Length: 450
Image 1: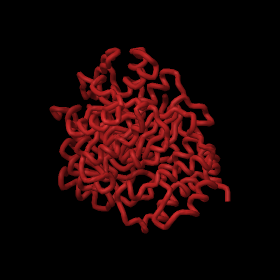
Image 2 (image 1 turned 45 degrees about the vertical axis):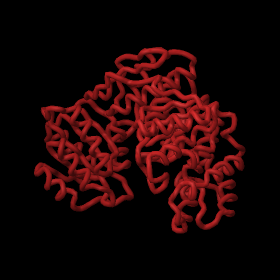
Image 3 (image 1 turned 180 degrees about the vertical axis):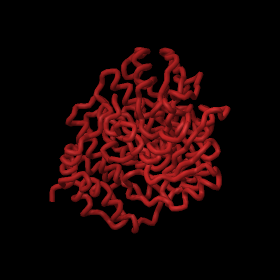
Image 4 (image 1 turned 120 degrees about the vertical axis):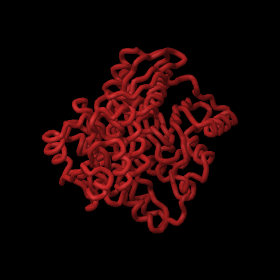
């Protein structure tokens, strides 16, 4: 039966994994992941990835924003650029973009139907514990979309690993390694060495251009040893960011490469690592264009860049920051950034928190209380998730001046705008909550600009 709605296509994308999940007993990616099934699916639909130019981005921190920096800068340079990332905030379409604009629902459904027959052919041959990865099925739709739109380059954010990631079936001439840290140990291995070797899987041969962001010394040693033994040249310590400052308008920094210096750049995202990600993007784009970039173009690109929900400044009066933190550790990072923006606590801070009950809402509330003058707990206007009934009680344990509102819109309209003199508003919570905030501030998730 032909798909007629986006939800039907999304159901297909997740159906193979959901069918197999209860039969899977192993955890390691090399035992569970089947990227060859993604390759088979692509071949069944005509190998739309062949002949296209791909940039793969992996790492533990900042691979999504680095992918966005690269795609945005290439778009500003006049190229047509595809971007494939995950997860999405509200709409699955956000994962597939060309020049910042998400694939339309009509195109998503149409191309889902192109994939459907090949998907089912493979599905019928799988054992109970085998599955077609959701990322791989989504990638099939993305490559079809990129090919028919004749993109010049396609920037692909890898999943948690690299070597056994569904995206790694693509032939990539560029590989970017963002900072690697201990993560997903049940899937990638027990130590940094194992995790690093997984990430390095996207470097397929010595023809690949490899860009290495700032790494821990032990990680860098593993990377260098692996690439050197395989005669792979790489770019490391040939681009960097310095004079990094966190300000109320975002992160300001200089970028220096072997070819040029780009001073006083600003991005409306908070975090020192974002400056390093931007430097990586500049160096890669220099190599693609064959020389230094126009400094005014780079300045304009980064100043206007949107990457929704990642320590993003969405308003300046009052200063409003949104971030998708749903556990204590990610909230700690956000709190550190608030301290940098408001070091002497002279500006009143209100944190609006919308974290589901199955996530670490007590941890997020506790951490945000350390940098806030008041707390508000609420929820998004539309969500399939359940939210805690005791969140206000938890908040009042830390700050008596805490409130609860039915929905985010009520919190913004009735409390912040009417009765509060907050200088800084921090909106933190689940992806749907952040998407709700973007809509309320009149900002699109489907068209984030070049």
